[in-house]
Image (cartoon, rainbow, N blue to C red):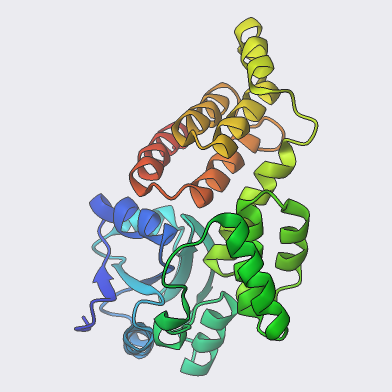
Length: 286
């Protein structure tokens, strides 16, 4: 095991907290290995080296398939080494076998994972928060001054989302290069934009509540009510509506209940609340 704090042994009893919930904030690379595996002895030191070099850009969870057979079975591991990337609470990519260091770096870059030391220095962040409209204006001026700096365009898109300028924000996000399009902030903004868009021509909150009082099985109305709550800042009420959808019919509109919950997890910043409802979702699904 490496001495770096960014490498740890994943265990069945703490896998949800150490890997799934942690991935909501930091990408987690899961390395399935075995002591008797020759290629694993080649791959593991490279992964540990990269985890140290990236300095928290991602964390490396090591799973001994002989010791943690339940985790290996859940991921349907058929050979080792096998590596999976978990981001935002979801498995997003992976590969079997021992890749060379160059290809591993390309894999990380493809998913927007960079060393933390390579990020913008802290002094570039405004010293004091501005009101949302003032922040939009500040960032418009910054983009005009440096039109080739895509990071500023992402910052502007995020500010526009906060003031409800969904169309302009979406246009900016769609034009981002691949490395920023997969940035956690861009993923969060897209999720929020999806909710804002769902409210176009939607009934007001009171009408949706009355509709559900008459027909609790109206999942479309329940979804829109959840979105109303989420956009209005009542995160717990929103998650409860989406969870109730999952209880009633997880297949509704091609899995909308689960998708709504996952998208909401990306938007909500309260980690304790997200963890609570992620466990409730898992209990219903598995």
